[in-house]
Amino acid sequence: MALNGKTVRNPLLRRNRLLTFGALALLALFLFIADTFGSEYEIRILINCAIFIALAVSYNLINGVTGQFSLAPNAFAAIGAYTSALLTMSPLEKQLSFIIEPVIWPLSVIHTPFLVSLIVAGLVTAFMGFLMGFPVFRVRGDYLAIVTLGFGEVVRVVANNTQSITNGPLGLKGIVNHTDIAWSWGFAMATVFFIVRLVRSSYGLALKAIRYDEAAAEAVGIDTFWHKMFAFILSAFFGGIGGGLLAHLITTISPNLFTFFLTFNLLIIIVLGGLGSTTGAVIAAVAVTISSELLRFFEEPMTLGGLYIPGIPGMRMVIFSVLLVVLMIYARRGLMGAEEFSWQRAMDGMKGLRSRWSGSR
Image (cartoon, rainbow, N blue to C red; front, top):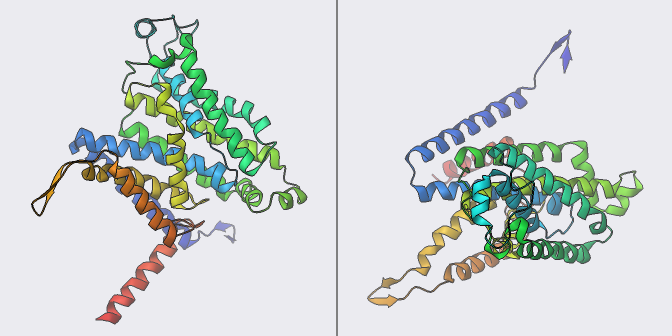
């Protein structure tokens, strides 16, 4: 608002920005301490959390915000992982890895820095998403899910049979471990920032209109095809970079790593967090990643009251599934529904808890 030629800032907006910067500073401090004093296992969990935050938030853009039931994240992650890995591996490493058939030119001589490989991985994946989008968005609903699911399987089968590009079922080994807390959390925060800004813009409102009623959105002049294409391409771009980070964390990739199970995990995360909620996707990504590690305890042998219980492989997934079913029963719209975090709502909640506490005393 302008007053006598001077801009008067909204005090609430200024307060929210200060709180946001303070929260980011605390997060950066926590990550620095964890990176300095944490064990290798704890650091790896934090890196996994960041990668899945970025993958879930970008996947939520097409599935939750735009309302298009896509099942292609495993394909995007696979394309990004192979692209980034092939670009960062040295010619000698490629020569040693490709035993059956030599890698094709120019991949045999290309060797790029890590950052360049991530950007190229995102662009290549976005281009593949662009090519795929034309036939994909001619169908809707369950048909869209089937087509994108088929695309994921096609990518996996192609990766399994192109010996001179992906090394087939042998996969790629000796990938340098570049992915650390700085790279992973930097990418996660950049993804969240970009998606949040997009969703709050007029373009994001158009995407939400497509989700609620595509016919009505077309009636008011929204080009639904190209809006869906944009969301799909953007989701592919971030998914490709996430796949590149995943490849340089694991350091060994193969086609079997990018099965539908990866898509299923991301689908669980965005549904649990609340379809359309970026905040919910972030919270659920952290919760699912950490809980899946904590539940490993139930797969180890234990003694309860003198009773010896042998370790049961896969028990953590059974318990995780039960917990997920219970959460879905009592929170059908997910942890956040379609809502986003706001400092005002958080403060109102704290005031309510304070008043209840003082009233109970």
